Image (cartoon, rainbow, N blue to C red; front, top):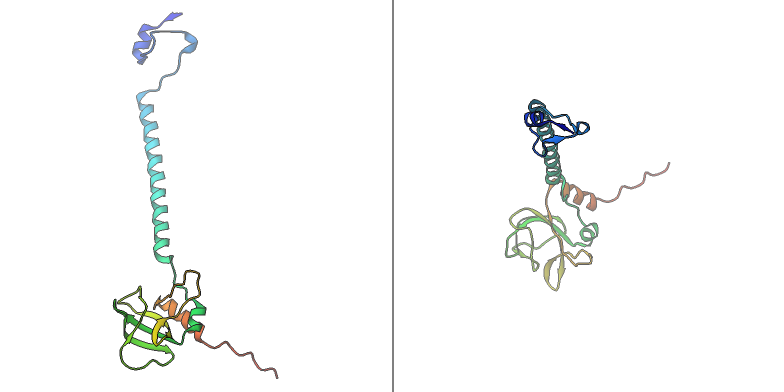
Length: 171
């Protein structure tokens, strides 16, 4: 055993003042430790920055591409009337433009609750027991859907209502 009291106290060894020469370990200098800490903090900053950018990309995708309007084709085809209008919370239809069918003049009140109020919507309607109702969708949950009148939804409506192209006559 080699007595290294002076060396141990100079290097900051706390556990043992006597050590075997084969157990001697190199000690990092304070400058080396600071450099390692700086590299570690730079790495964490890079990782955090990449995570924030990824989060922002996912958030923008969710905001701009989530839930596009998809019209129920069967519901549109089953409808006697299709109206572009606004509906208030009492079910009264305002500012209407009929796309398909002829509705009577005067006020029109729906017997169904409409989930979009005070914005222009596509209303597929049928007449049941003397009342105008939103056309059923034949979905398992029995929902009666209305659609926001977005440009994409209006294009879909036009495609659904357009007659299929006729095949070219053979000569």
